[in-house]
Image (cartoon, rainbow, N blue to C red; front, top):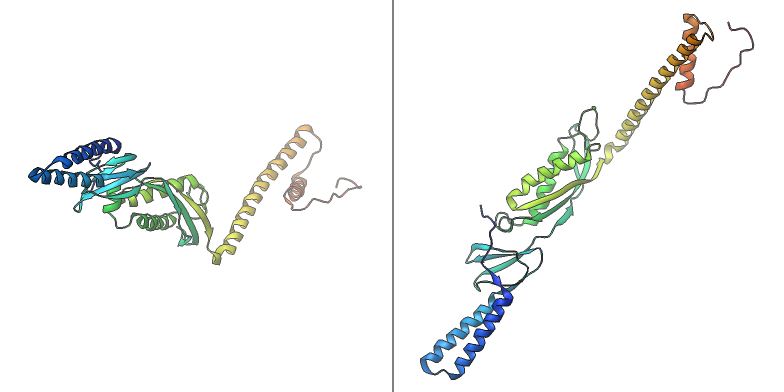
Length: 284
C-alpha cells in the first residue's frame, strides 16, 4: 500500500533569486567565452532554462502529488511558490472539506418495510497517495461506497421504534448518524478519505405503504393517549371515593360504588362533554 510522504521541494522565491543570479552570471560568461568554453557555458544555460520548469504554485488546502517516471515521489502541501526537480510530474489534489447528498434510495428496513432514505456526507482527502493510486476515481468511490453503506445501515434498524429499548431510524438520529459515519469511514479508509460527518437527510416510507403506515402511527398515538387518559381517570376516581369515605359525605354500598365508578369513568374518558342530569327525587 502506498503511504503519503513529503516530497522534495524548496522555497520558490529563494530558488527564483538564485536561478536569476546564475542566469545573469552565465549570460555574462557566454558573451565572453570562445571555443570549447563557449560550449560548456551554453550547456549550463540550457540546464538553467530547464530548472525554471521546476516552479509551481500550491494553493491553500491543496496538495501537489509528484511522480518520477511512474514512481510516487511524494506530496507537497506547503502553500505558495515552490520549486522541485524539473523531471517530476505534478498533479493537484484538493484537501478541502467537501460534501455531497446521495440520491433517495429505496430499501427495506429491519422489519421488511420499504422506505426511502438519503444521506449527506462531509468528507476530505487525508492521504493523497492512497486517494490517487489505491482507487481509480476517489470521488466516484466516495459516492458509491457511501450509498452502499447507507443501504447496509437501513437494513439493520427499523423505521419506527416498536419496543421501548429499540434503536430506530426515526427516533435515534444521533446514534444512527454515528453508526452511519463509522460504516462509511470503514469503506473509505483504503482510499485515504476521512469522513467528518454523515447524517440522514431524507427518511420516509415508500409511497405504496405510506398511507397504511400513517394509519398505524395514528392508531398507536390514539392508543397511547387513551392509555394515559384511563390511567389518570382511574386515579381520579380512586381519589374521589377515598375523599368521600374519609370525610363522611355519603355512604355507598358496593353496588352504588360500582355505578358511581362507571359514571365517573364515562365522564372522564368520553370524547364529548358529559350532559348533567339533575335528580329531583330521593337518592335511590
